[in-house]
Amino acid sequence: MKKAFYGYYRPSDDEFAELWATARIVVDANVLLAVYGLSPSTRDVLLGLLDRVRDRVWIPSQFAFEYQRNRIGKIREQVKHYEDVHRSLQAILEHNFRSKTQHPFVSEEVERRLEEICTCLLEGKRQQESLLDVDPHFARVTDIFADRVGPAYTEVELEKFYETARARFDKNIPPGFKDSQKPVPERYGDFVGWRQILDFATKNRVSVILVTDDAKEDW
Image 1 (cartoon, rainbow, N blue to C red):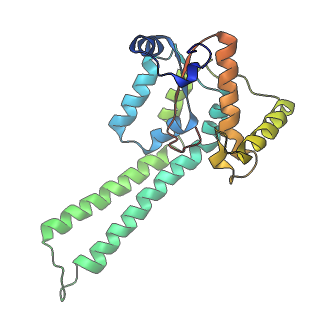
Image 2 (image 1 turned 135 degrees about the vertical axis):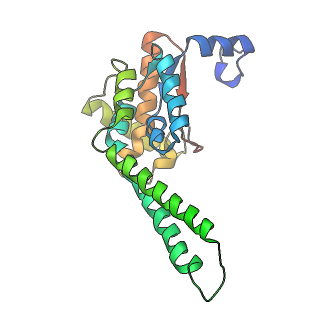
Image 3 (image 1 turned 120 degrees about the horizontal axis):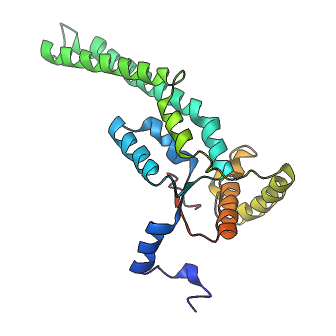
C-alpha cells in the first residue's frame, strides 16, 4: 500500500537522511528576495548555505524570472521601510520629547541615543539605495545558480498550464490558488514553477526539497 500511496506516509529517519544528503535543493524566488530584508549576519548564513550546496541547487525558470523581475522592487521596499521608521522617530523626537512645558520628559542622553538611531537609519537607507547601482547579493546569487536554471515553457505550453491552473483554482487545489486575485499571468506563477519542478524531477529521476518563504495554505 505504501508504494501505491507514498505521499500519505511520513518518510522514515533513514529516508529523511537520504533526502537531505542527495536531494536537489529547489529554491523559491521569495527566498532569494528575502535576502534584502534580512540582517547582514542572517543573510550571510543563508547565502553561505546555498553556496555550500551549489552542486545540488536548482531553480525553475519561473522562479528565476520572478526573482529577476522583483529584485529592484524589493530593494526599494526596504528603502521605504527605513524612510518610514526614520520619519516616525524624528516626529517622536520633535513633537513628544523636546517640549519644555509638558510631559513626557527624557534626558539629553536619551535624546542623543535616539538621534544616533536616526543617523543609523539614514545610513541603512543609503546602503540599501546603493544596491540599486552595485548589488553584491545579486552577483552572488547569479554565481551560485550559474547553469542551474531550468528551461522556460513556450507560450503555447504556458497557455495550456494557465487553463489547467484556472480549473484547479476554482476547486482550491494547490499550489497557488491563494494567488487567484493577482493579475494574469502572475497568479499562475506558483503553479507554473511547480510544474517545472515536476518536469525536472521526472526527467532526472531525482528527489527534490523545495525551500520557500511562502506560508500560505495553498502549497
